[in-house]
Length: 69
View 1: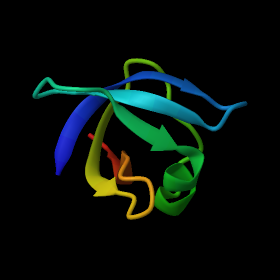
View 2: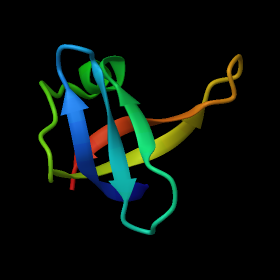
View 3: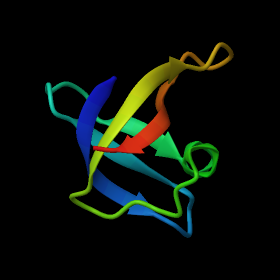
View 4: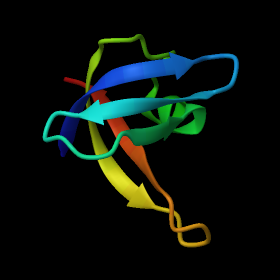
């Protein structure tokens, strides 16, 4: 699993970004990933573990299987 820090998350819009601990591009996170993980929300600076998943249609990568780190 990857680990990172929540850069920002907007509950109204239902998405945000995680800054990976190993550097690289920020990772998109959607509200549906939070729901699947049983999480209510994310806060800036929160440490999180996640897996990367690439959407077959768009080719975009996002965070899934979220857990508090």
